[in-house]
Length: 285
Image (cartoon, rainbow, N blue to C red):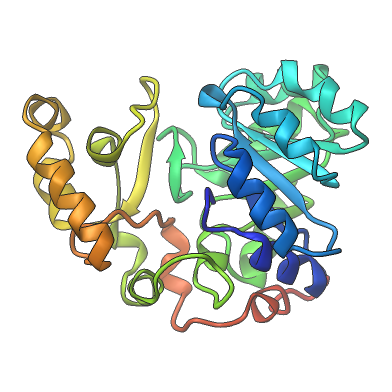
């Protein structure tokens, strides 16, 4: 979760028995340094979006000695060897069996199977269980992690049935005291259900960057997605007024307009809790 999963959240997850991941986004070195310091001595990983990674972004991440680096989107393979050289594990997020096999052939230690239920960016293809089922057949000896709508022990149990060793959670940890965002954003997560989320390219056009073709972002519905989802070409032709409106909405935390990345599992969220309380939902911790 780019810039939402900061050092305090990552440390809280790890200290409770999970593995906290700093949401490094595109590799902003200054933000990473600030958040790594906030994570203290906790054993945490870092995550980065590879297709638009800042120059030197991976080196900036590795300079903080993470136990693992989570690579997502784009060509992951070139980054795995440097991660191993730094003594960290390579977690590779994929959407298809072919991508999983390529990542494992390149040395991936863990595969995250992202389903279309996930919040944030991804590809509207297979559900997380369909993805797990397909991927487990081609990389049977590599640990798999399910991502997309994960929130409860029941979700973990179901993921086990499809070959997962564990689950990755974004939206569930977004709705915690430690997550980095305005209280209005977190409160909105409590209000919405999975059916109140939508995949679109609306916010790519409005706030950038414009992701490659085939990718969409799952967000909570807003007045902007209600108006423009499915009509992004029309939006792009006259986007500036909406960009201004979004900047204003972000400044005031107007969640009827401001983007809020959220997965379909948001319906299971009914209060803002500590990160430790989320981890403690699971029997295996």
